[in-house]
Amino acid sequence: METITVNRRDYRLPDRPVVVICADGCAQEYLSLGFVHGELPHLAKLAAYGHYGLARGALPSFTNVNNCAMVTGTPPSETGIGGNYILDP
Image (tube, rainbow, N blue to C red; front, top):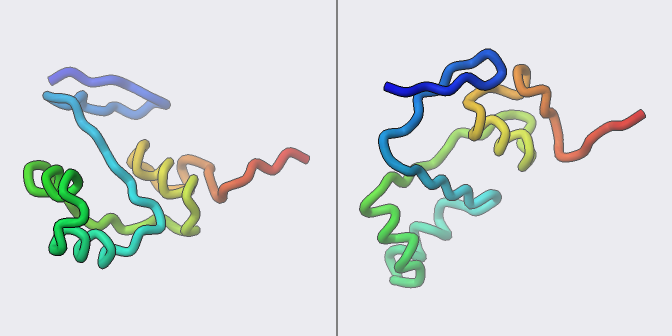
């Protein structure tokens, strides 16, 4: 098992390539109905042969906060990302 260390944290490298699709701000019902009605054939195939699930969001609920939490696996209290803007006094 090969690992990589980033910011004093060890991560196991995946056995095969991984792609994550984040449909930020998309209600689950849009995807579910699109799958049922055949309007999203490519995403439906990815969901059927890969993994499809609803993620629990980090708080505060902003795009950058949640994307950083997904990529790093750590909460905002550790990433230091608390919003979508940089405060530069």
